[in-house]
Amino acid sequence: MTYVLLVISFVAIIYGANWFVDGAVAVARRLKVSDFVIGAVVVGIGTSLPELVVSIKGAIDGNASVSIGNVVGSNIFNVLAILSVTAIAYPVTITRSNLRKDLPICFGLSVLLLLLTFNLFDGSQPTLAWYDGVVLLACFVAYMWMSLRDGKKEGAATPEELADAKPTSLGKAIGLVLVGVVVLIVGCDTFVDQAIAIAKQLGVSDAFISITLIACGTSLPELAASVAAALKKNTQLALGNIIGSNIFNICLILGISSQVITLDAPNITIVDYAVMVGALVLTALLGLKGKISRWGGLVMFACFGCYLAYLISGQL
Image (cartoon, rainbow, N blue to C red; front, side, top):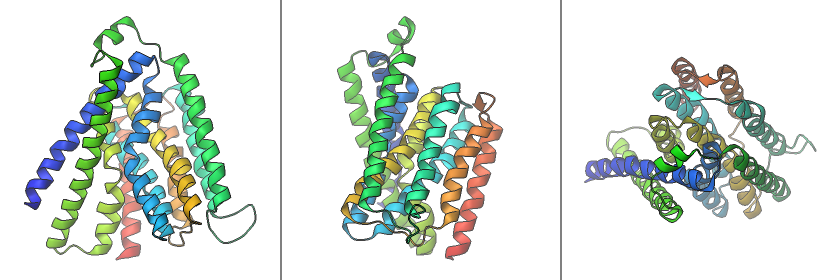
C-alpha cells in the first residue's frame, strides 16, 4: 500500500503543478501582471505553505530551531537544487530587472536575516525576537506592494498571449490555481510521508532521513511548479516562484513565527547562512549574460551536492 500511495502522490504532484502553473499564467494575462510577479506572489506564496505550517507548528511546540532551520534549508534548496534542475530542464532567462532589483532584494533580505539572527546590532546571543519579526513583516509588505506596482507596468499581455491563456476567464483561472495548489501540497505531503516510511523499512538512518527527505520535502511544491513552468518555457514564472518563495520564507514565515516565541537555532551555523547568501550571488553571476544555461544549472547542482555532503558528514 505504501508504494501505491507513493505512485498516486507522485501523479498528483505532476497534475497539481501543471494546473497551478496554467492557472497562474492565465491570472497574469487577465490581470496584465508580469509572469515574474505572478510567480513571486501567487506561486511563491502558494508553494511555501508547507514551510509556513512546519515553522509555525515548530514555534508553537517550542521547537524554535525547526522554524529557522526549515527556512534556511529550504532557501538553499530552492536556489541550488530547484533553480539548477529548472535550468537543466530549460535555460532560465534572467532579465535586467531581475539583476538590478529582484535578486539584490532577496540578497539584502537574506543578509538582514543573518544580521538580525546573530544580533550583530547589539552583540547578544543568536536569536530572532518579536521586534526582529516586525522588521521582517514590514519588509514583506513593502516587497509585495512594490512587486504588484511594478508588475502592472511590465506585464501587459499581447492580444495573442491573452487569446492563448487557458482557462479563458479570471474566475476559472483563480479556481485552477486553488485546486492546483491543494492537490500539489497534499500530493507532496503524502509523497514525503511514504518515502520516509520506505526509507525506514530499508534501514536508512534517521539522521539521513531528516537531512534529505524532511528538509527537502517541504520544498517539493516549488520544485514541481518550477520544473512545470520551465517545461512550458515560462522560466520567468519559475524564477519568480523561487525568489518569491525565499522572500516569503524569510519575511512572512519567520516574521509570524517570531511573534509566537523567540526563535533561536544554535545548530544553524554561519556556514549555513553563508551558503544561503552565496547561492544568490552565484545565481546573479551565472545570469549576467541574460540566462542561466544548462551548464550553469549543473554548476549550481554540484554546489548543492557539496553542501549536502558537508551536512551529512556532520550528522552521521
